[in-house]
Image (tube, rainbow, N blue to C red; front, side):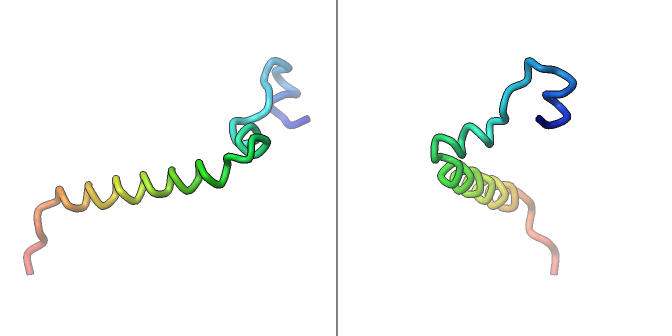
Length: 52
């Protein structure tokens, strides 16, 4: 039992534990990294070019 469930018995397992149990964690992690990379590239493209 971790600290959170010791304090509040109504707290269950984490979302990460659920994804792991369903065999989806690797797929979800890779999709999240892809989305993050896309977002970072899009934000960088919105910036004005730096003077040289």
